[in-house]
Image (tube, rainbow, N blue to C red):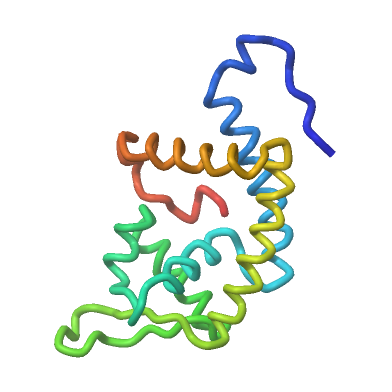
Length: 159
């Protein structure tokens, strides 16, 4: 069911409000479907990045790249490790660094989760055709380039 859009032009023209409403619809529904495969939106995000990186990722770099506080990243990786979706080991040649890799179970779970997330995206962006969706993604990526970096995400902010 589509969300009613306010006819108040001060609300409907404020981009932040529109982003918030779309994010909330997407996030809430995505969280629901990811729960069916044992993931949260945060663990899905980490697993998705790990799945895209060949040979794993250095934990500290992963934290920086994703804008996640290092202590929060430890908790997220612990969750993935405890469920057998990721492995963490000392990096060969640099015993101070932890390398994190996705497991074969993690890859299978990631594929299911991506399928579910894509379905939610289709629901949330159902009012746009394929060309418009592609344009939206392109514009959002361009806009993100100039965004000042926010402080790293912390677990206290919720998933």
